[in-house]
Image (cartoon, rainbow, N blue to C red; front, side, top):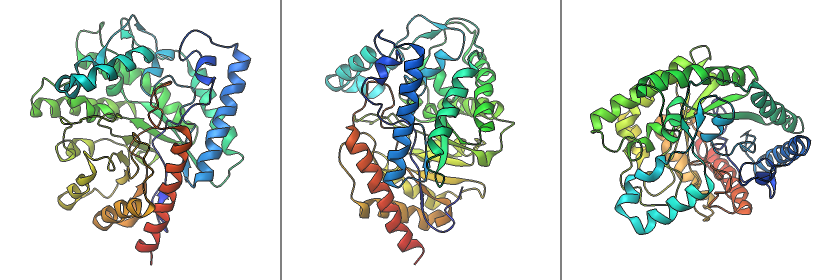
Length: 379
């Protein structure tokens, strides 16, 4: 998709789940409802979030990741080989620098987010769960024929970041196994006709979490491997049917060790998906639109910049949103910008820093800002 006559809008996937859904699905605690009740609540939840996205003015909408405990950890419900418990976020570099901030955050995440480890051979085992998500989004979109749909999925690299390898002989071997297993999900989602968003925070946040002890050159070589694994897993899918999402960590915190976009962009551009979603609204990265003053964007790439912060309850002014869109569009071309959010608003079930009512107000101001930008870019 390109913005041929106006700036189109989307977001990056997760949205607040209705009260009771998390417990009913067994995503937190142990009060899971029966299967029929789960199916009904989930179907209604997806219909509700799709309707609210459309009402807010979003063009390309998602199921809000309503069925998933977390954007990366959900795969343990679909893949074999996972069990036990790992604590991958304990070594986060900015949390080490600022323990008075980091410790409460870590404790809160560990209390709500179970992260098992890889303890056996990885294989895809639950195609029915993919079919359920596709069916729910398709049913919800039937009431909104003018809206497009996208579905999120986890990259091999981000799975390796959250679900520690305790089985394979090397990181490379683990990546290859994940790529082979997730290829089934990628191709099934593509076959549904929805845009495939592959979440790749490992290419950015991995610098100060998973690979904080590596040199800059070593880190770049590592994410080259991650991109190669992703490209192998998606080799049968047309690039224009996919986008990747970069993230430096969807949390309100110091971020003083975030790797600059300029350092990773050459590697990111090697990924097959045509659309690149990335953070451009939060205070640590808003200045990085200037990277594209010196970077020639390949003809087959489209940018999906975050122009709304997903970690605070501030509602951005539409004129600020428009300013963020326009200054980047002036560099790369108005047709190659799709306005989005920095990240998801409910990345993990039970852990959402932005209040639900404010989430949709922020999506509304995203649409208003895109309209203002359109007036300036298409006078």
